[in-house]
Amino acid sequence: MKAGIVGLPNVGKSTLFNALTSSKAAQSANYPFCTIEPNEGIVSVPDDRLRRISKHIVPKKLVPTALKLVDIAGIVKGASEGEGLGNQFLSHIREVDAILQVVRCFEDPDIVHVAGAVNPVSDIETVEIELMLADIQTLENALPKAERAAKGGDKDAVLRASGIRKCMTQLAANEPLRKLKLDPMEDKAISSFGLLTAKPILYVANVDETDLGGTGPLVIQVREFAAKVGASVVPVCAKLEAEIAELDEADRAEMLTAAGVAEPALPVLAREAYRVLGLQSYFTAGEKEVRAWPVPVGATAPQAAGVIHTDFEKGFIRAEVYTLEDLETYKSEKEIRQAGKLRVEGKSYVMKDGDICHFLFNT
Image (cartoon, rainbow, N blue to C red; front, side, top):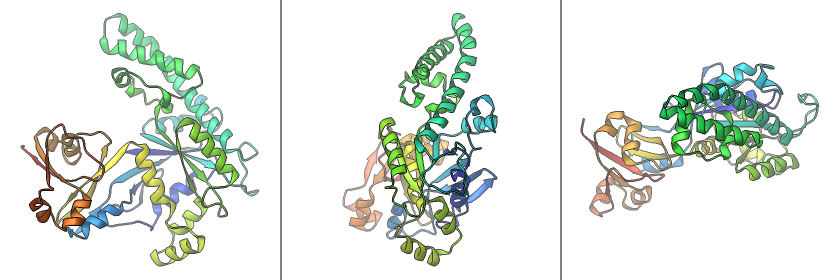
């Protein structure tokens, strides 16, 4: 899954991206935080359940889930019409599954705000307007073709045209598409458009070192706005994260203690982005590895098996499932089985966050 980091110029977006993707804070041999391309990086999603499982099933390695981050060109007013790097930002953001908008919540006379004054809610609205305008343009361009095909009896085109009209009505009311509930078939019919305001969003409040908890007046404005639109807020000090990223473990712990912070912002941000994407984790555990696998909330056991390999889903027979609590109580899979706590689940089983599984399948 992929999340795009967006924001106005000079809000700390690239500073944060560079800190996250070059961080030594949670590097491992399995999923190092690394830059893939100049504007893309992979980060692992920290999960203490891996460590807890490995206390009882000792593996050669731990493998967390991974999230791809994309640093998208700074958005300016008029970006939807090609201002700044508008076309570049549009092409990149259409490919992501969720949006992380970095919002400036700090004052610094040495860093000029593009609008002349720090106003986080205005910044959020500027970005939202540009995304909405881009969506309107996409839909207006697509509607005539869909209507022509619909008149010819193309059933998919009928759904596409209906979905487009509903989206245009929503945007005309100055409401983003993430608030619109389409019929699932209509939603599928327009999914190829990559509509920007339909993507889930998380606000990242970039604070200074005097407001690491995000309780200052600028962050409060963002929290109040986010509450109205059903979004979440994660306060981050990009400057501090950049400094932490350069340290080894001992020095990092010392700096965090001095700053009064329990952990770097990265784990918090990664976990919240994972949640915003509608994902949860299940685990497989053995001597080779203990591994977390991402699966959408509501996925069935065969769909979860398909995350490992498509053949597992096609040939799914059943899943053997137990919980971390079972493992910590009985100490081994053998004891779990003997205690009758190992559940056998079929094709209709809906996965729960934290399930530990073995899948049986035919090839």
